[in-house]
Length: 56
Image (tube, rainbow, N blue to C red; front, side, top):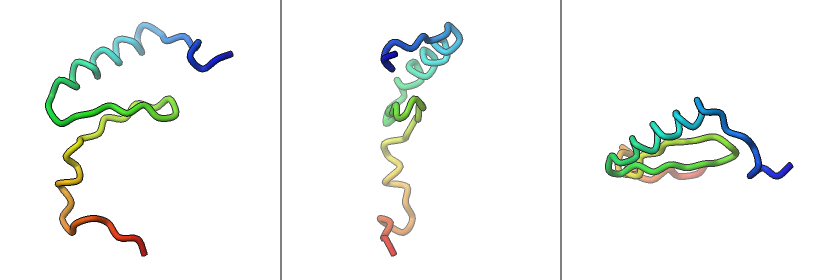
């Protein structure tokens, strides 16, 4: 069965509609990864206190 053929329940669809409507707020994006919905603020990079993270 193709992943694109999975059924979505009406309650899941209603939740997606609510999320989509909330995306009209500025500086927000939605990411779909591995079937999980993630709301991410695009300005999160500006909120770092110590600058970019460094490895090590």
